[in-house]
Length: 152
Image (cartoon, rainbow, N blue to C red):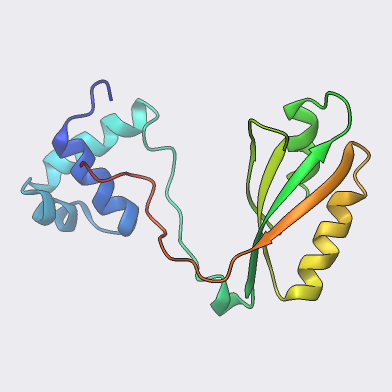
């Protein structure tokens, strides 16, 4: 990673766990003063490494108990922009990616229950560019990592 040193990575890891941590709290964890942490965070923001701050929610606590990965097979050559426009409209979509292989699009979905998931999949299938779908339901989420990977 160009221009990101070990201290920057350490700061990013702390913020990925708790974006509300103060500069002093981050500094305690990475052995820097609060002003030094602020300078580094400001630089990371200016360079676009930090794009914003958010909250991580517990989907189950909010009533979203079902998670699935829906594979979408498209008719003809459907552009990624068309796919994005379609799936962005679904509040149940957590993530969507074009992929290699016979599948065109993989969508991570969260729903209240199986009936809700079925309705979402039916809506996907009704999109004009979709030829078929295939769903895989998540039984247990075993590993969920923050966006900043640990060094091996």
